[in-house]
Image (cartoon, rainbow over all chains, first blue to last red):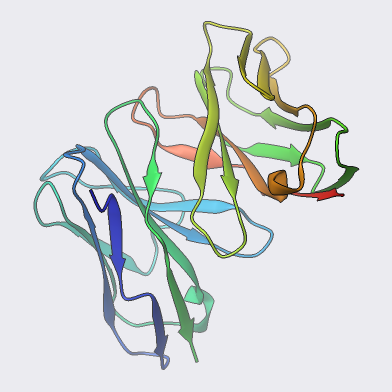
Length: 111
Length: 113
């Protein structure tokens, strides 16, 4: 079992460029999440998906879109990247009201 | 609004001492409170969690206590070891069961040999 995987591991963008962060899990979990982690601010929820076909906003959704492609995959898209989106992005999954398993993270820098 | 405050932001202890990290939350309806450990450059991993129907839970050297009336919960680590050095995050579920967590800002724990 690979658990939760994320691609890419690192990315540098210029302001205004777009990109998609990919996340996949092989634990057959229904729920998936995207977080961003900034120094001194802990983890903040961007979007989550309680089940295949559903998505909902978290604390900081502005500037992001998501797609729950199927039960395994949950992608995060930045349409027009801004320096304020420089962060480490974590994907996570869980089965219902239980432990969230995190991926290894994507370190994104927007110049 | 929904908020979790965590203290202290940094904590330094000698090996073998105890460490206590405290969190307060804003919404009395919260009923799930996990703690995550994040080593440098790694992903967060759950170390212990507690639900609102219990007041305390222990797992070897780690314990969590919950006071719903006061809206605070604490992580206790006894007999600390250098490998306990990491950032610890508390969190609370304000979504009534959808597992949408609000995290505290984290506590950087350093255990000195």
